[in-house]
Length: 95
Image 1 (cartoon, one colour):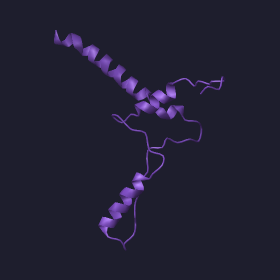
Image 2 (spheres, helix red, strand yellow; image 1 turned 90 degrees about the vertical axis):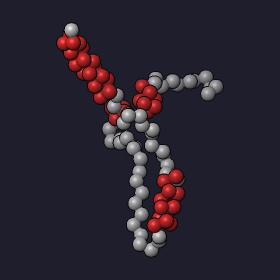
Image 3 (cartoon, one colour; image 1 turned 30 degrees about the vertical axis):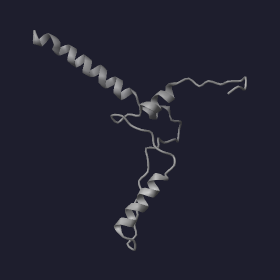
Image 4 (cartoon, helix red, strand yellow; image 1 turned 135 degrees about the vertical axis):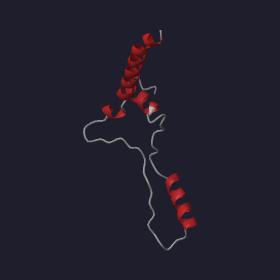
């Protein structure tokens, strides 16, 4: 009885993997574009103390623009839904 579920596990795992791997946001990028995933700040200065260096780094990170998209299990679901939504052009001028 236990062996009857074995093929279904493989099918389910394959389907789940194909769904997860097909949700790539980079397929919506045009030629030459890159997906922004954030920035890192490295301060290379020996004249300031560690405390000042950490304070400066946290201030600089707070002012980084644009903010990278949030992730969930390594995916960016908000960006995915934004990309698959249809583009609506309103010609009546209300919006």
